[in-house]
Length: 251
Image (cartoon, rainbow, N blue to C red; front, side, top):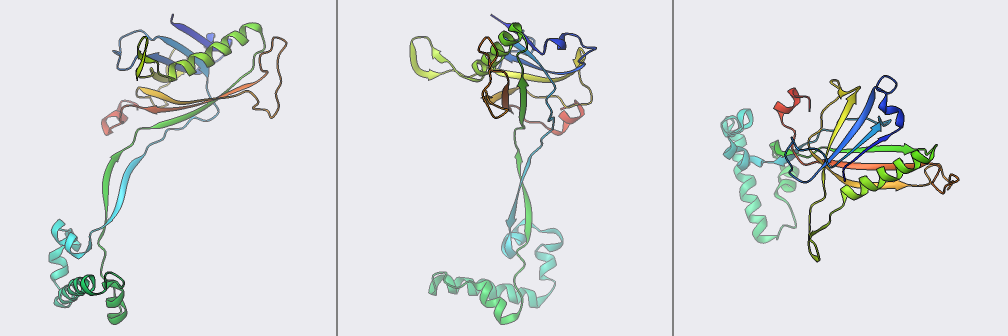
């Protein structure tokens, strides 16, 4: 049965708490138009950030690699302009081959040439684009059960977060395969709409739900046995990449 859980209860009044977060859970790859299985509305956490990781690696092309690559200003035509440099590169290459055969790599050609001539070969460093990583997020929420109703809502929120982050067996009565956990759509809200000044989220999965029942350094409980303070740390990872065109759409 789908649940709609809200904490704190004052979030129901958008004039009193206009900024909040929404988590809506869906079966994996379910249509965007389908209704959510569960919805959790929470207050805005203290830390709100937008990560973005683009992967680049530094590579040493060397003289030969740079020549093959065409190297622009540092390419083969630019380097060949000086006959001395060409002779140096040839000597360096010949020395490398000789060392490989006779000294089994105990001495490097670069070391010998550097010592003898007072210069080292240009490594022709370049940056190679490797791709874009999925964005990951961390959120921390503290819960204080002031009433019996608060206790029930907080307890159900934690169970819903944990349950939707975990898999189930793919077939009833068989433990051979595991199904996928549910996906979640996250949104920063302002009153009843998305906050236009904060980024949107791609479909995500919850990668960690850490529940701390002693965030204040000691264990304390209410009269009904509910811990007096609970901190939930969430980690999420988007399952779709953010491209250049997505930035204009608010992602």
